[in-house]
Image (cartoon, rainbow, N blue to C red):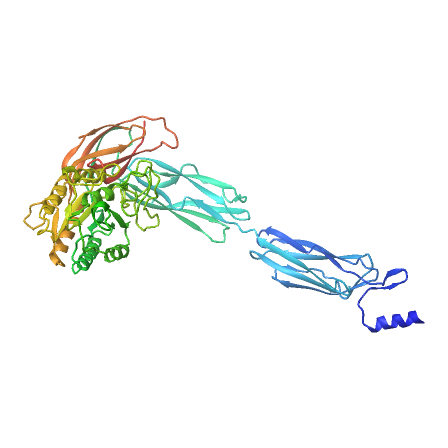
Length: 604
């Protein structure tokens, strides 16, 4: 009787246990169970509108019958239960029921879920995740567009074009054609269509450009497929330009033009001894000059550097500092000019020649020759190198994120572009070459000749700005004129039609100063007279055996420069040498590329 009372108390507490404990341990009470497997079904990638059927199983591992009360499907409508069992569904102990799930592909990345509920007290519900996707075909064409560039009339050039099945499913090609001017054609006939490509499989087409006369050509490669993007049209362009005849032997007249409308302008400013009232005017004037030059030469960069004197000769002196490397962002240049701090004290000298040398070479300056950078007296290189003043042990000042930057010299000039150094000074320029004292740093302290050599290495020019220095330092103008002369920097300063050494006076805000400086830069950039002009060929197969004449002298920018080329080269024809390229560059003063053309030769 006490046992029955205990049982009654336990039952009255509403226990959910499936067994009771007596003198002999736990005794299981009868109960159904429910297991659903698998927990997920992935139908994978199938063609559009394809159908597939898979299934899951509902098992009863319990000791009593299981009543399944709910089997429902939610999610994308592509998934269905084609023959769901009638509910409620009874599954005997140890029994199982298989339920089919169907998938009819309609889109990419489809999902759904089957929900199952029953009377198993421990596992009353379960889910089966469903997924599938459209094995979408995709067409990739390489190259796109198809560019043949310039070749002479009667020449032939080929390119291989790859049509690739780059999607998850098979790609069916049903149209391949070339339309347009009809000068582009397939080297071999297009394949028989329709053509099915498995994923990752490609079809290589050889397209030929064979112009008969000069002029631009525009055709289209048209490809139809079951790519959802529809019909593809790939431009094919080329130009039959005046060039070498494709007989491999003969004389050819080539006329190049001494074009030059590019410039990189570097402002080098002496920050010592300027009247504080005039300094803001100078910054404003140079900012105006920058804007005016940009309006005339859109493809131009500017940079800013400053200098004072060597550290041993005054308080807070330094021979050179890069304030803003060359950039096509005029706002950066304007900010750099207006943020300069001018000193009211000067040693009487300024390191203008050192500044020009550093700006042109980027070599750096190590006053104590210890290969260690001292910010009070040294100059970092632009790009660290074993050949710089610090033997490559000191980081450079180059900022690789600067917009429009180049990599040449000490300010980031662009290759094949004319650097123009605008050297602004108020003081006498310290020149160790004529006996002016200097600290004797590593590689020597730069004199006028060192500055000239560094500028000449870049093919650059120098404009001197003589700032209010006439009374205290009358020799400064002569120094600037001499630097202009040895760097061959001349332009018409006073409007008398005679080219003078490029030195411009400045004594305050003055419209005439700005106009003269702008005219000087434009003159040097666009109306330069080059001492020597020659044709330099990149001719890996040796197709050109002679060029006449070898060189021209004293050629003004903008003038045509004719040459006669003797072409008599032979190479073994291959698919890569069906047309041989010869690059011709018109080079001035050994460094400046004035113009460039690509010639084409069909070898014997």
